[in-house]
Image (cartoon, rainbow, N blue to C red):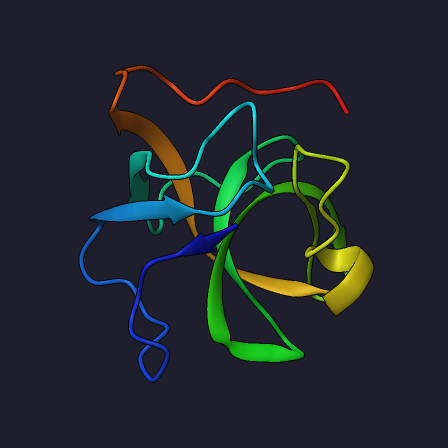
Length: 116
């Protein structure tokens, strides 16, 4: 699942940033068209967190995925939709830029943590 962002600038601005979700890879947790707030900084990333990241092999692509485990100085990420494999299975380790903290559109609520 990609985050709408200009490909030439895969950076987030400010401590809280709105991000639009595109694609099916995080369904059912997040769906295409959902809008979330992400926080850069704050508490450390933990397995199970939904994050915004950049794959080292695809630095132009900002993605929304679930953190699975720390690996090689970055994170191994997976989408919640097992039928879509555009995650670390395809692109390897990613560098996390921020943590998704709140879904505000279309239905408000915290992004649930899922057992791994």
